[in-house]
Length: 310
Image (cartoon, rainbow, N blue to C red; front, side):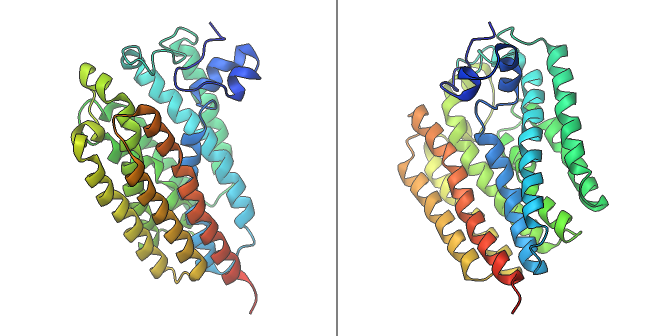
């Protein structure tokens, strides 16, 4: 049983190199599918770079980037473990998710709960490296993470709640580096939420048929054939809101080039999307890591330039 693979994650290091006993736990954390961790990380890195540019001080930026990397991967793992505990009955009814460790019988619920606590403790150690305001800001995000798995049962907009959770890092960089959350941080957060709604709608089209059968709601089902138009709205909002944040932050040309590259990537996704092709939906969803890295690269160059002595 430990050797069984999750349906939408094959040929990765977990399946081929990790010890057999560890594989179900690594799958609970989605280390066989790290794209979610990268997407959680992007707003953290954006905000850290933008805040460092505002402060004109990049001396701590590399350390913050490393800590955010560790924290994003660990806390995404904890979030996925909680999601799998909460969704174990639904997962058993969906073709893509019925091979996940809990519905497949590879890990019991108490074992998963213990693993969840272990991951949360590692995340707490990372969080304690920051100032008190940042610690409290990070802890506040747990409320959203806790309620997210249940949103698909009660609203057509669970992607909004996911956006609130996955974009929290847009606030954390400001909390860590500047010790505050201001209008610039909130605009970056709002732009990231719009981005998450867009890319997770693409992702949710993989499960639209199964979701309809079992009564799970999503923006993919809500938008249906109008998904392309909806993506124009949400991806457009993402670019505009992030652009306003850059303007308020006094960002220089590298950041704007990064935003233009980010916007171009989102346009490419919309033009390429075929909602009836699950494999393509997954590829386009995963490509958002690259979109996020393009923006981050521009913000990093901008931060370094603004921090350099004149």
